[in-house]
Image (tube, rainbow, N blue to C red; front, side):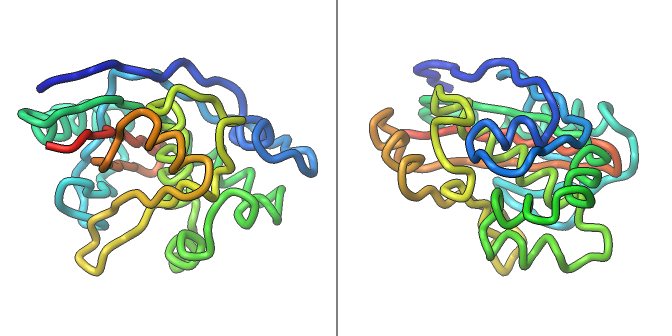
Length: 205
């Protein structure tokens, strides 16, 4: 594995506060989700998605599931030319609180495609939480904070097979181009309590 650099940082504060930094709007006052810098990788158990960017919806084992996900995701990077990595962790309860208290939050942070998928189950908090984590992980990989790009410019796209991928537009796409990133690997995992995302920006082989 060839790693050019590892970018990221530590993110703290509530989900609402973190999103509010990049998209000023009505006060987001829900309790928060803790972010994490590079280090943990997620590729958890479960069947929501499979493949290089599978989404795990495993049993409620909290950090244990994330630890298992770390080992599984790391194997996908062996032999790849990795330029940047980023990771983030979100508490599902905090996302649930934000969605309940801030009706416009989802439209402000997630694309129509993401919302259509997340809103299928009665409780959409897990799906929203893991996608919020993915957006923050990408920004960390790009070496910027939440002011670096509008969050809707970073979209988690789900293939018919269930495998997730990333679609960047606008400023986010320009930042990736500047760093030499040509493609992304994304791994998502979530339990009933925690949602975790790991991304790796790859250069051309």
